[in-house]
Image (tube, rainbow, N blue to C red):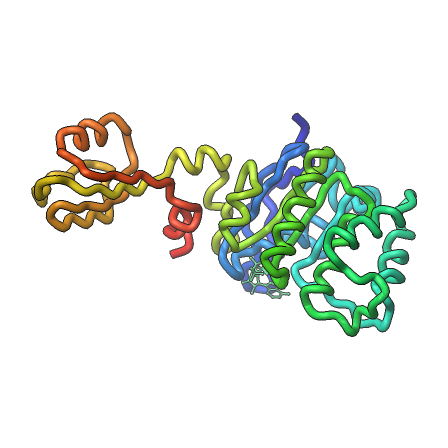
Length: 292
Ligand SMILES: Nc1ncnc2c1ncn2[C@@H]1O[C@H](COP(=O)(O)OP(=O)(O)OP(=O)(O)O)[C@@H](O)[C@H]1O
């Protein structure tokens, strides 16, 4: 599979303060790639640099195999971008703004504009000035997708959308992905990354600290085990490697476990249990220690 995005040691300093440092990773064609990290980690800086909106201090990147600075205009035709904050300072109606945006592309996008507006329940005849933040965001979404781009780059796409709209928007993204679009999006909301992504990169303090497939991340993570026994469990019974956050209250115990499943199963099978639950931790739990 070809890489749609390739980032090579991208660094951006804002004067003396840190933006991003030595960022390298790539996104393959057809992937849904999540870019996550806490506020101020450098997500928007990476995205803006990629799009050529700001210039890197050092390093380079390609999109569709083309240099992001030298061939910015050609690359832009096949990218849909939703910035984290959409600002429209005009008295235009949504439809007029979207037609104007569409005029930059070679194809006729009018049918797609209507379809997208229907899906997102956006009133195209309303003046953008009079719209709520969430509805302005929808205008941005339609604007980003109207030309059926090969690469969709979204910076915190769901902020401002209500849960129902988020759902519709994710379905829309999944459809675009099935049609072949590659999707790269940043978020600090872990559940949305968990639902959509094939792979994730985690950025913290301007540097990539983890790059994994979702399935590997899950496999490499703790499971939460909760059990009830017919008899009290000895306080040191679960003194094992790979166990943490142990709470042992007589005939009940909960803990997190990471390691060989057979080891813990043997330990458990020696007890007389009345109940047991075994949960996959969600991303929130997996990543919390990166955030701390
Ligand atoms: N124009 C700028 N001038 C100076 N510093 C900036 C500028 N833009 C961003 N920064 C700094 O660069 C760092 C990364 O910011 P960035 O906006 O890329 O983070 P982010 O991960 O997108 O955060 P958020 O989730 O809050 O949007 C922050 O420390 C920020 O203060």
